Length: 555
Image (cartoon, rainbow, N blue to C red; front, top):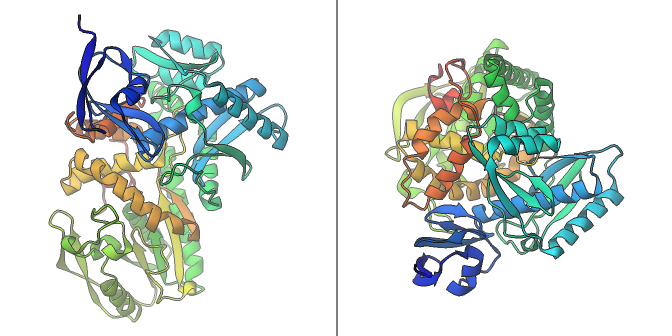
């Protein structure tokens, strides 16, 4: 029997014989891998694995540090485990909920018998540092799902028990940290000693878990005030609690109890009511001089369908909306500016023909007729199809695109004439109390389905562009979101269960040899927690139809 195995390390470009059964952690030194930042996991044959993973057969290995989103997820996941353990140690009867990403960190709540103030928070922070200093291993246990469900239920962790009970998994893994058990759907660092940088602090009625800066992970992310965004999350969490659908296990249970039709109807009605309220506010502002509604939001947030539904509601309010999509003002593809990585920066404000857009806006505001361009995403060319627009006395201009809230886009229009709307898919339902669903994952899945269906892009192509999209959003969209007069959450309780059937077939086409396979595999695993639902009960005006097809709107 051989006592060595050959591995190909992409970081060094070398192939080496290494001892059979070595962990990825041990191989860092053996292979001479160096990185400017903490290495938190590795991709083995294009599949993300923990550094505790042991190598028994020939493998291709690529180590990733905290500048990579995969490594950062592993770090944050491990940090959340330490936080949960510290809370359990000091407040054993308390319940902790990690709800969502906000203010460059993660917002969490603690429900305890007594209020949790500064002394308690300081004690939790100190306990976390003690756990880190002790460098305790994260243990992984794999067992039949029924037994894992029983274990969590005996510990009073019904959210995790229900998630696994309603999954299709025969075996499930859970993690142990010094006797405390928890569940995470991705890998952890080998031990607590890896987690050296963090903080916790009071934040808007709850607490903020601060994490390393994504661009420069040797310092913490700066705290950013996002009160409007947080209020949108709070409103939706309240709606979820009333609906008794806090977590994915609750959603799956509703499916198994044949209540999904009601869930869809309530979610759609809730969203319709929000749009009607926004239209009412715009109508009131119209009487005070507002003539332009600017709708912004990140990629795949549902801006287009929101705009079309808002236009219908404004017509009901006796206003005549005139709609424009900024996507149609892209410069021709070869003129697209490049980002710092040399990639086409479609998220840049300067990817738009600003001169033409401003010219059209001025002419429309004067009551003149303009012929709108149509951008062909397949050819990367601008086309004209005799689409003429003009504004009348009771018209209001509706402009939709990722740069809608950027003051530079409409600097020539007085502020009192503008109404700003921010749209995003702020996923409020969680996998369980400690595993939130990132809004970026929701949007990426929407985009994968839409790009495949309408733009001829494979999942591999969409995933390969996603990091560039996210960088562009951080630079061009998110800094302006708090400028909004109103925020609209386009995410729906049931949507990932409906998207699953569409996304899986596309994600499965990503070759195992492609670097994008690791992300495709992660998304497939994530989607597997949702029980399938069909989308036949979605109304033709549903925002989700923009991505899944079958919409009564023309795009």
